[in-house]
Length: 502
Image 1 (cartoon, helix red, strand yellow):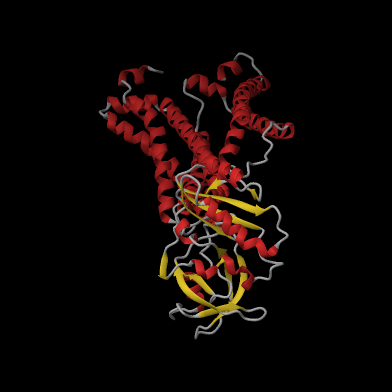
Image 2: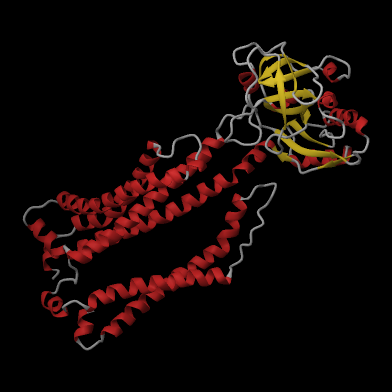
């Protein structure tokens, strides 16, 4: 640049050259980015979308969005192309030509270090965020369910002719009997709401417990067929399961509750043999004959709610016929069969009387509730990885440039007896200060940002030390690798070559 200026090139011509070079680079990068967006976005959407409800998201290239990003790219060109040119325009070019050294002073070196430190800080924030969201996803996927979704298929089934309220129960019991005869079916059951596909009915209840009624005496109410707990692998804590006679009208009313219900309504009292009833209308007392382990129903983040399980044959004792959920039930099937075969058997055998919904694996239904968490973990990892690459490139560039600037100095040090290890350590220490400055800023920014994302996390506190240590170690490993390559080359340079370079 100094030679160009000395032979008559104007300042404007130099600026034009810098902007042109930057524009060519930005156009090349923008072209790659558009291709990545065109091909990669639909793939990302398919990966993140729930299996039962594919995402309805337009992934075509939008001209307004393309124009906006092009404007940002143009702004980048102006900043990256103009600022170095303007700084060069105010420099004494004769000093460069006389000394024969690169045009770089302490101020320009500081600017480069600040820029690289900013990259390190931003990268560390995003890496810590990616680790947070990834750990949240892992914690949710490994959280205790209270049931076993392995080899369980579920579907929603509705009566096609739901006018006769009196025939609800026999129709569902007959359907269950026929499903249990399908090839590959080991166990099957019905429930008024499916796990992670529906919400149990809420009802205010009171009990014969000695303790006072809770301030919020609400409990979930689920009507189930026999075999429900065995089908889903919900274990008993005490008591017994429902028997066939529990469905018979006129027989004593029996119910099973979960441990959350016991904690809320009985505390340390023994619940077996106690009775419960709903708060509204005339009381119908129901004896508790069993207690099962807690199971999550609608969200992996929430604790299992207090639950009452009632035999489906006694549904009208709890809910008036005009209001009970007898028109639609959730079917759970455990066995060695796949989605297609169960769907085909259902439509062939009971499709004339019932409307069969989509058949899904219970595990897939659970996974579909984690779309937001998968999105945050995936996108966070992608952007964290991209910023790591940018920070590594920036650090590699600044160390490489420092080696060029200090080539003669390094040659003198080697001539005076400095070993390659000393030169390597010298260059790495210089880069370490740049990385350390960015890491400190990044950790402080991440500590503030994680509190804003508190609601999105699960299983640990926002400023979890393990997460910060993992993010810091990843950043340090990438930074060391980026700085080591040019520093090692400098350490391996021959002293005579370095001294004769100028």
